[in-house]
Image 1: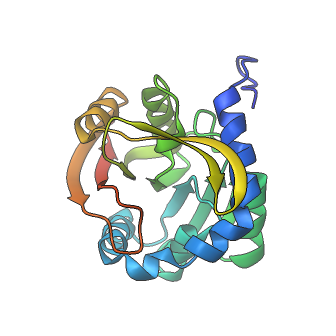
Image 2 (image 1 turned 60 degrees about the horizontal axis):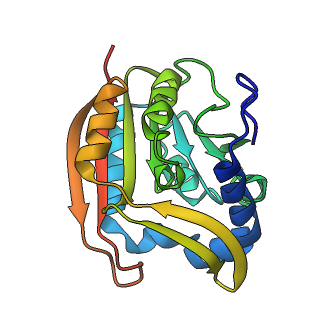
Length: 222
């Protein structure tokens, strides 16, 4: 994918896009109802929705087939929910299945959103596909799209390894999963202009891959 502001192509992002396009329908079948079995994740999302306030505009960044965006919309408090994903196939599934939300195709380093458009945003396991050196710029771009005081919830796999998948649920893919240290992500959030307000680390649920998970709730500082 080329960044139209710089003309620079990002081969890693193109690999991610192709891989998620390839697995989109299977991903929906396997993970489309995952929040049903994730009470802590629902609690964190519920806290974000409640703090964002009635009528808030909330973004789901790296939304996949839109199941998290749909859950947020179903709570009845948000005024508008916007899902953003790099994969056109995922965006198409979201639009088809979840008419209560809006879906846009876009890159975390160049979000299709105006300055201060969102009151809150979530990025659940989407930062893990960024290359080294892209984390802080991506968080700064997310900050741009949040109003002053806006909330951001990020979740990621804990560690320092990079796992590369070439086969995923029977499909040929080529995608990297970057595990991240909580202190590293917290530091990048602070450097990008956020204040970290809460941190939760948990073991995997039985139906998940066996990795520790961390979620950080942060607020954009003025």
